[in-house]
Structure formats: structure tokens, C-alpha cells
Length: 497
Image 1 (spheres, rainbow, N blue to C red):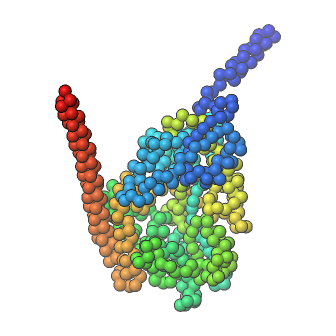
Image 2: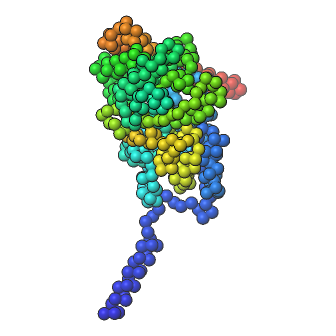
Image 3: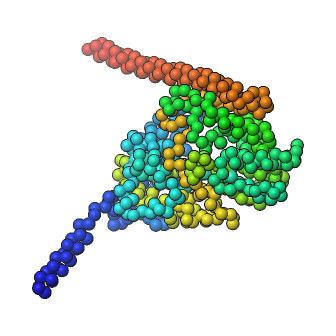
């Protein structure tokens, strides 16, 4: 019996040993023994790449070299050209340089996935047990949604806006300050409580619509939290004359007319699209404002160059939400997703870089300084200047966010956008000034918007036809030149004979 037990134990040990020797094959080949490698990375420019990532990475992997594909080169080449198809130019640029790692936004990632240009990270993430739990809730879902359910990229930072408020103004006037997860209706109702505070040059506004753009900019900000769209599913027709849009037009115009909101006028004579009004928030004449994380440095440093700026006892709460999905945000975006090219010959080195950039070490380092970037790993940046960062992380990014302007299948001529914004502002201003009812203004926006859309499509069609004609004439000229050159050669040979 003892002999059989020893044999069984020996067999068990052999099986275990063999399992170790012939274990699960790595999804990606390991780096060589010397740890050397080289990867080509798409980034804004070389200097900023090394400051942001390269120097830190090379401390851990000193023998992996970088070649930076400078995106600025592409933009510089195209800046003087008219009617540029940036999508086509991007494809040409990437095909030319063949990078291993791409820094892209979510829209571009989705398109490259559909083209089969990106490497699926799921298998290597699972095998190496790379921590996805440390990301803020909803972020990984947001990326997966654009990858058809798979992860084709990871993002170390995200961007969102919050509502900043002047706590002193709320205390002085016995008004409850804003809170996380308010709707736009609640924010504007709250802002209206300041409408009777002061007058003329001393008027206090509840909410300040910064950067101009007039009433249309406020309408677009509000619409961003809703499920409303400007076009039908195919992007063929403008859909504005609806109860939903009427409700938002009324909400916007009432808030401005009643002096709950200050909105800078749309100054068509200003090439920037907004007037040069001073910033009332820093003068203590506006209680709330919506802006991004970099605005904190504005609050801290404004007094250094603006003599009229007052010290502000500030706070912040989450952006307004859609009442239909009160735990989600439509304002969160990912502008730097790191992905690996499907045809990269250096996938292991590329993965080590993507893994490092998105790991806890970089997130912890980023949490020590506030440069406008918010780490997507939310366990490190808990406070900024003694203020809780809860407002930035209180909402899940919407996994399936769809722009009010439509999805990738909606083709809208570029000329339409500026024309439509002008129409919006004109009609909204008419409602604010009591020259039109909401129904009349919405009907006019629908009618004039459809005309602007048609005009834009006709201009785009004419432009494409002209481009095709120019290409055709250029090709014919080249062919004629080739034919003439061939004829000359034959004649010369004949004469020589």
C-alpha cells in the first residue's frame, strides 16, 4: 500500500512539473533577455512626449527606444489648404509612418477598429491580470462600447466639466448652494433666485454663460445632457420642431430674460465668435459657472493679473444630469486613448508602454500636480487645494454617448454648423426680447435650418464635382504628355534608322 502511495505522489509531482514547463503560452512574446526594443509612437510632439511619459518609462525600461511620430507635422502641412478631408489625411499619415502605438480619441479609435487596424487587448489584459478595477466606474465600459464589446485601447486621463460656485454669494443671500446630480432645470431654477439681487452694474447673476456664443451656446450646453438630436437617424432631415426642443428653448430663453443667467451676446463682428465682456464670476457678480478642471488654476491665479478679480471661496459640484439617467454624464470625454496597431511587429514593447502609461504608478504621479488632466484611476486624486474632487468622479461617463449633432453615419456639410448657430441665436434672441413666441421661433429655426442644410449640401456637392473634374483633367494632361513623349521617341528612332 505504501509503495502505491509513493508512486501516486511521484506521478502527481511529475504532472505538476510538466504543467509548469508547458504552462499557458504567453499571448505576446516576452521581451528579449536584454530587454531591448523599439516602438514608434504617435504623439503631439517629441518634447512633450518625453516630459509626459517617455522619461518616466525609460527609468523602468532603459533599453526600449522611442521614435515619435509628430502629429503637428500633419496639421502644419494641411493648415493652408482649403476643404481638407482630415479623415482621409489621417489615414494617409498613419499608413505612411506605420506607428506601433497610437494616441487617438474615441471616435478615431472606433473607426480604426471597424477598419481592422487595432490590436485587441482583452487577451493580454486577462492573462497578465492587468487591473481594470482601479478605473473610475463606467470608463472601461465607455471604451468597450466603441470597440464593439472589446478593449482596443486604454486611457490614462479624461476630461469633464463641473459647476463651480461662489459659496460666499450663496451664504450672503441665504440661498442653498448647488449639489451633485442636479438637472439643468434645477440649476436654472436655483440661478433665478439671484435675479432680484442688485441691478444695473451691480446685478448679481445666478449662472454665467462664459465664452460668449449667446443664447445658442447655453441651449447647446443644456441639450448636451439630454437625448435630443438635431437630425433623424439617417442624418437626412433636420428635426427641431418637436416638443422636446420647444421645452429646452423655453428653459433657455426664460432663464436669460429673467436675469437668472447672464449670457454674452453673439458678436458676429468678432472673428472669435464672442464679445469681449469681462468675466463676472471673478468680479463676484455671478454665483455659478461651468468649466473644466484647469479652471481651478484660474481661480488661484486670476488676481495676479486681473486687478478687479476678488478672492473667491469656491466649491464645485457635478455637471447637470439627464433626469432619465441621473448617475451618468454626457460631458465626459477621452481625448487620449492609447492603442496598438494590429500590424505592429513590436506588440510586446508597445503593450509594456500602454500598460505603463495606464498603470497606477503614472496615475499616482499625475495626482500630485494639477495641469488640467484628471487621472482615470480615481483612487489617488482625492483633493485639490483642500477641495474634494468628488464632483469630477461623481458620475459615470455614458457608455453609449451620442452627440446631438448625430453619430458617425450622419454626414453634415461643414458650412451648415456656423449658419445654423447664427439662426439659433437670432431666433432665441427674438424670444428673449418677446418679439416671437417659442412656437414661432422653433418653426423658423426648423424652416431656415432646413434651407441652410440644403444650401450646404449643394455647396459640398459642387465642390466635390469640381475636385473630381480637376483630378480628371490632371490625369488626362499627364496621359497626353506621356503619349506625346512616346511619340517623339518613336519618331526620333525612325529618323535615326
